[in-house]
Length: 195
Image 1 (cartoon, rainbow, N blue to C red):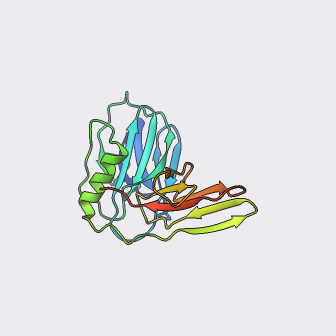
Image 2 (cartoon, rainbow, N blue to C red):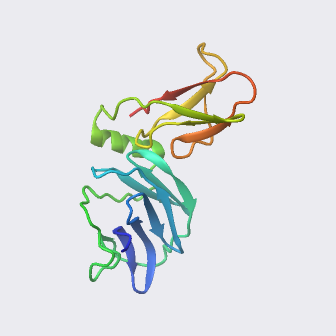
């Protein structure tokens, strides 16, 4: 009946941050001046999770793939000890139910490329089979998507199949994007991440 805590910097007198997975295992969020969360892929296997605090922005990564970011004030002036698997340092509160392995803290914000390299180093060269693009169309709106567990891929578009002219498609959220298909011909391809 609670959202289990992965790790936290808080106690009864204040909170710097407190990272929790939803009780339904479909999102991870941060408590600091209000709770905000982002969706994650589900599954009962090991996952690589990264949260980056950088100049008022909180960004999250799941298995090397950015899940999004949000603005959030972090109470960095409070001196609190960090605890793993509990939201309080004295006794287990909102206790984590599962395993944690190879926890690391960095003194500088990691870039998306650095996060991907950490993930690729963990899983080795065979990340996963190539995903399949799916689409649906409603009027002139074309929605393109691929599986949520296919992390790190970038969708590109071009007006022709010839070499060159391929540009990244903006606005992709959770491996899905909707584009206007009302004029012209466009081709799409999904490019695998580079470890």
